[in-house]
Image (tube, rainbow, N blue to C red; front, top):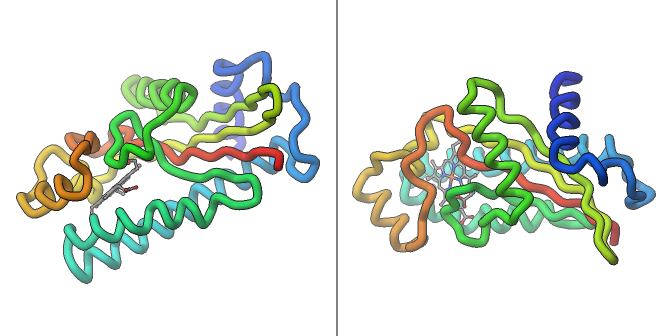
Length: 193
Ligand code: HEC
């Protein structure tokens, strides 16, 4: 855990040596508290999604899993996006175009992919952003592809899955992944209200 926090700040320093720690955010949340809470929210969203997906697949197969994921993923993201938080998932290859990464997210995802390609673990990323009227923290937590994900994100999909994905996600980019590759990341913001 200490290790993770250390690597996180190494990466954060690479991204933004000048802004980290230099701004005052909401009085109620310190830097460390923000990161702790961001981790908790990432894990909670991930666990809820996984549970719902597993239940749907068990009940109605992979195509039901796709239907449930389409409905539930944005709902759950909205459920966690309260009290100054914005919580979601993103990727360099998105299924849902609403999950497309912005500039900072793209950089962080590329850094995570490079770390994995070099045999290391993909690191978390955190950064403080400042603007004219804006003070916010951002955090990303990598999501690595597992064998079970290949049913809907792999290179070989069943005709049923392919067809269902085409109907719901005509612009789907999120196939062709392999076990152990970076699938994407949880992405969180906390902003002073
Ligand atoms: C039953 C099919 C199915 C399985 C299995 C599945 N996914 Fe997905 N995944 C989806 C669908 C559908 C979406 C689009 C959800 C939306 O509309 O927001 C999605 C979206 C995502 C996203 C958000 C970024 C994007 O591409 O829009 C991530 C990250 C993701 N999946 C990771 C995983 C991981 C990791 C696993 C394995 C643990 C997994 N998925 C297993 C169907 C699946």
